[in-house]
Image (cartoon, rainbow, N blue to C red; front, top):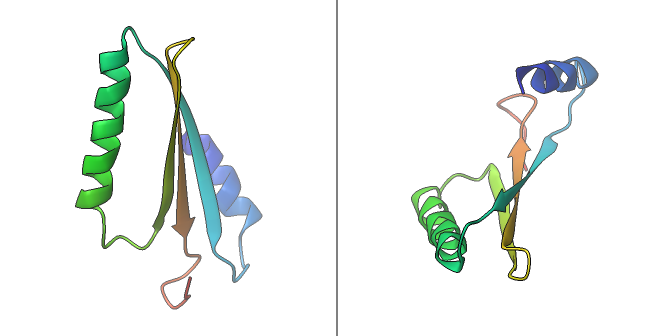
Length: 85
């Protein structure tokens, strides 16, 4: 993962633009209860980080037939401290 951030930093060097970093995670659950727990944990994370403007969006999609939860997290990252989103 650190290598990806290094590459992103090199690409955006000397560029005045904010990045939207998207992370996609597929959880292969053992049960519907595990999928529900992931949903509950997302809610807790959102409430805990409500004031964090860099956290743009978290989406949750449960594919019950496969017992797979897809979570996508979008985060805004500023190039410098003076930028606005």
